[in-house]
Amino acid sequence: MKAPYWTRKRDWIQEHVFTPFDFIQIDHEKLRMDAMEWGVNTAEFDNLRRLTPEVFRKDKDAQWQIQYDLEFPPNEATAANARYCLDRAISVLLRKQQHSTARRWPSRDMGFDPPTIYLDAPVFSKARQDSEVVHRINDQYRYRLSALVSGFNAAEKYYTISGHRPVEGKEFGADWFHGYLLVQGDA
Image (tube, rainbow, N blue to C red):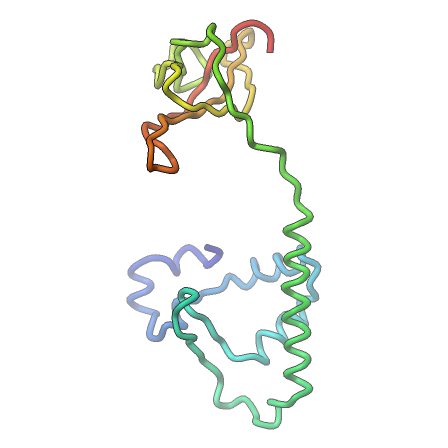
């Protein structure tokens, strides 16, 4: 996902991909910025990349693919370098994990059981009453509110709402919609 956009195009792939490793394209500037954001020393990160072979597998059950430089001096493949690389790899993974767990997000579990005043109320495609009606509130759907927004008419407020019709055996239901519900009363 962080590869340069042109490396994802069919023409580029046909012209430049000769081995499975050619599919792996790294935006080095983005990787460097990510490492700095995680608190990883970029020189040590580069050392880790230079001193270890390239490996990957396309999924957890696939065989590992490997590529390494034959010109890598055999005297560099030492226990000390292996320890150094293992320590750096663990450090990078730990810092990345610490960075990810430091992020906080507001709770997104705001289900909405519509009060009777909302039954048959229109859900609009935009935060304005003259826009297309994409749904009408009913008791057959499950709803979720995600925001309270001012409408194009500043005197109006809308809930950003999405919903679906539950279907037995289907985790995500059917007939999904997203739109704006005019707030009734004070919000």
